[in-house]
Length: 270
Image (tube, rainbow, N blue to C red; front, side, top):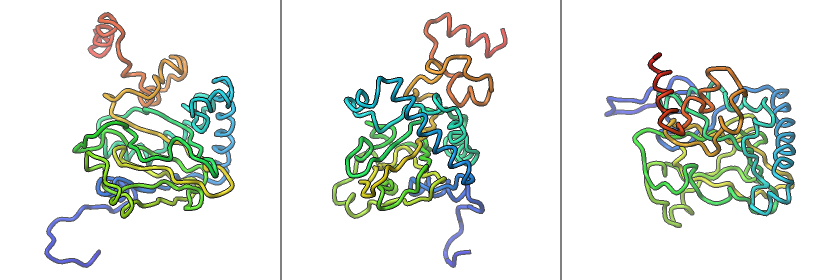
């Protein structure tokens, strides 16, 4: 135990999940091992590239996406490569979300993120993953779990964070940013987990290769999804109750009073 005196209370953190939760509550970020084998990582890498091709084709091609600065992002990649749902259902990440958000959580978004070499991209500016919100919460309303498909290094633009800024409403001063920004380097297969109100940014990629990641945002059900996943995927996508709950099938907004009454009857069994 760390030597100390005059202390009557300590935060208990006797396992990796508890340590990550403590770091997230205090600093706003943590690095969490994914627990995947080299073969599994190879499968995710292959699926990511296949999802990228399929998503670009569905949108009319890479050039069309480049016109709206969407060519370095894959929206809902698991819709094109279902194996990528594994990354969103990692048990350690779901347990951390349960500890921090409480109740139950939905997947607000899963996006493939590509940080290209020697150029800028749309995540390379300071932001929150609940953008335009200048509020703080007594407990997190949303957690961001960025899966490192490739190793995150200083050279290839590992994520920059402003520690503890999830506890203040306004974006900090330039002086604070310059003095306090920290870069989170992490091995392939791990997750960089953030309180979504923590200010963060991708850094410039000074390597010669793309740096790829898969970003998951988990939220309280009261926050709308980035894309209406049940509508996009269709009702037949899965009959797994746990997966349907995670993907938001249980919290679709009723389109009429009649639909609302139907949900009430289903809940009450009447």
